[in-house]
Image: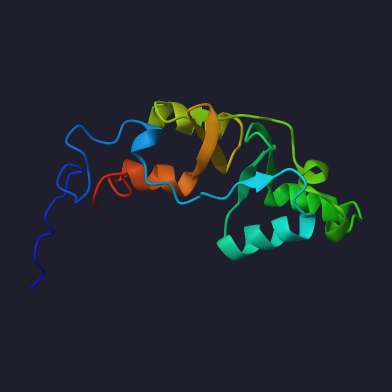
Length: 151
């Protein structure tokens, strides 16, 4: 005989804060990858592949956020006939610098990602990019998993 499934609310799941997950800073992000100016294009492509990461921000020597490289940007470089081993981050990156802070609400982050068709959203702490949140991270947060607290 089948047992009736117990309804689980987000407040009954382990790791969920009493008030629920409301801000980007409460998410345990899965993307800590950050590229640097001068970084080789082939190394960038390999890092994206080995980490299964859709993209990452690019920072300069002062750790200032200057651009973003996605898998699509690498694919565009290859499609145009360029040799990744001769390119650097600045040759591949887009100069859009869309980011949020740890205080940004989950809803605002979701809206920004959807409106700009982003897979990844850099998060600034103390004026510097610290990590990125992915759609995966936002989904985990909405169902009550992946907080920055104890799981």
